[in-house]
Each structure stands twice: as C-alpha cells, then as structure tokens.
Amino acid sequence: MRRLTATDAARSFSSLLDEVERTGETFVVERRGRAIASIAPAAATSGREVKGMLRSRPADPSWPAELRQLRASLAPETRRWNA
Image 1 (cartoon, rainbow, N blue to C red):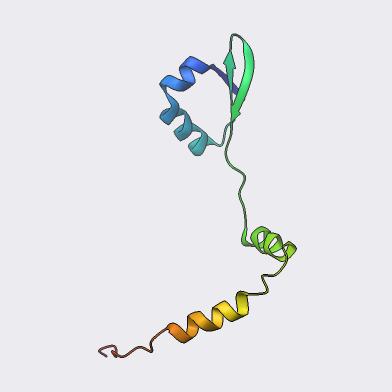
Image 2: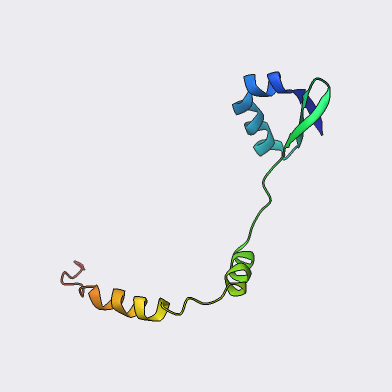
C-alpha cells in the first residue's frame, strides 16, 4: 500500500488510476499527514451476485402484463436476410 499527498493525487489523478488498474495496488491519500481516503481496485462482480440481488427483491406484479403489451406492439420482421 503506497501513500501520497492529496496534492500529488490531484496533480496526477489519471496516472494514479492507471496504476491502480495496471497493478491492482491500493493507494492511501493523506492530507497533513493523516490518511483521508484510499484508492483501490473495484471489487469484481459476477452475474451470480446480480441474480441473487434480483431474487431478493419482490416481483413486480405488473411486469407480465407490461411484457405482453410490449410483445404485442412489436411488428414481425418483414425483410428476409439475403443468403
């Protein structure tokens, strides 16, 4: 974990983000010698986490009717692909 001043972080923010992305290293930003923030790689997420989040929410009772209405409004494809 590397430390840098808030001034240095501000002056080279783009380079700092590039370094975090490239190395996966965490940087601690200090002001007047005191740690005030850390800049670290974002945690990876997966489809499994998103599915779990969606399953934990109540179902929207109007969704099936809205989906039927949307599907009914779609026109069938009239052009064929040239083979």
